[in-house]
Amino acid sequence: MQLKNKTVVITGGAGGIGSALAAACAEAGCNVVVSDLDAQAVAHVAKNIGGKSMGCNVRDESQIKQLIAFAEQTFGQVDIYISNAGLADTQPSHAASAADDTWQRQWDVHVMSHVWAARDLLPKMIARGDGYLVNIASAAGLLNQIQDAAYTATKHAAVAFAESLTIDHHHQGVKVSVVCPQYVNTDIIGKAKVEEDKPLPDGLLTPVQCAQSIVEGLQKEAFLILPHPVVGQYAAFKGTDRQRWVEAMQKLKTSLTSDDGKIDMSRLVNKV
Image (cartoon, rainbow, N blue to C red; front, side):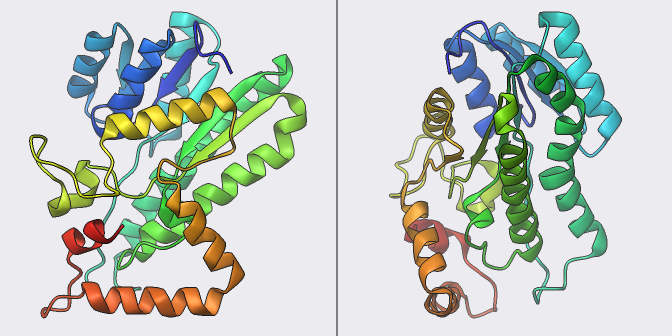
């Protein structure tokens, strides 16, 4: 996959992996349209890379359609669509304790935003025999995010949807990648985020490092992109012996639990 002169749309682009991806794609010669719920912040990102921006709430299918239409009107056909928007909510107590609206918010952002983008773009990509859909999931979509059942379940669904896309449409020229990073130094890891001027623990990537890994994966047209290669080893262990994997995760959760019963994310990040 040659990225030069390709038109790429990126959601969740006001910061973190999204803004780093926007910069990496612009550097590779792409026409970049970057979007985010925070229209002002994403406009600043676009200005810095010479791209275009648009505010977009990916929980609203009509806004995703408007984003795609804006990109098409600005640059022509959308060659690459990167569904990057994401969020995390720590569950209040037990695994089913998160409210319904928390589950629905994560379902909309992590799954339906991918479905809605594909619903608009697939017919056009199939008709011309070319196009690339990139869904940013998480290592949790292959493994598990301790103490966030909604995040884990919806990221698993995101991976499964990407599998369906490539199984059903690869022969029609539609390329698909699903990205499953572990921990990246962004706001989504909460208090475990490390200040920019401090060294990162092993296994915690910067957004720039993660974005570079994604770009390299796109150039190779890899279906599964793992910015943290060790995730592949964990997933293989899980697939080989699910019982031992579950028991290992139970022990890991115990080791990360503070006296108040809550998970210390900084401990978890330092164990990856």
